[in-house]
Length: 398
Image 1: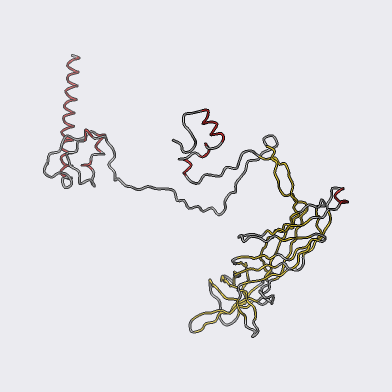
Image 2: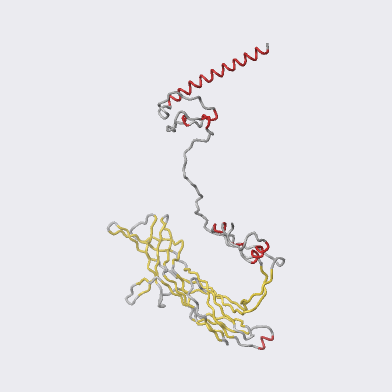
């Protein structure tokens, strides 16, 4: 009885399987007829349907795969996805929106991990600082004027008269600032200025000073007092253009101011430069009393500025449909140059300093270091090669 039930269940299962296959063959034949435009038209008989795990990858069942044959051997297919092959390679955009950068950050060290080094250097024996400013003048020393012009108007300006424009900021544009030190003297000593080399962005000047021995001060371990004087310091700013940005109500206005001088006929002539002539700088300073030669160093820092520019008067003129503007600044512009000069007396000495024995390691930019190992060259590498004879010399990794 049990055997009969098992046979019956097996028979019912076979009947259900045959019915399922018959239905699926019919469905597959209908689908093949629908896709006969893209498949092989010479054969209207479809093969045995693919297993379920391969049905979604069957090229004959993809509506956009008309170039494939209906007789795809799905039983030998590895079920890889059917997709377009592209040569697209994407990388991250290398542009950076950072407006600032971080300097080199050195690791701190203390006396426990520091090494003493004997070096020969200059010690600052005495130093002082001048902070001065001066009004601008023309290159020949005459009064400096400005030629004004309206660069842009973002908004409307009423016609018929002048409107008052409040100045919000003043910007400076120039090509270079040339510093010409004056005649430097030290009371009681001989000063020999050193001709500076033609280098860019250089604002440091040096002079050799022949020392004189002062036995009284030297016996006390003190220096000899002297007086520093500098006569005729001059600074010239080339290709100078001032930009004044302001507003009148909601209208934004930009005005340019170009330096000029007045000729003998009373006409303003554009010169694009401004000069600054300073009075004599004088202050006491201390000189070594040992009689050895010393170095006098002058370091300059400059900054352009203006006195208060309260407002500007602008008038809109319409001539034959074209608009032009007349600009007038009632109080004018007082251009100022601020100068900070540090004067130092340097004496050569041999001193011992504590420092780290580990050198500063720069960050590697080029990928060439991945091919060649430069760190293997040197005394340590040579001793390592002598102990290990697996390869000779140092250089590229193999």
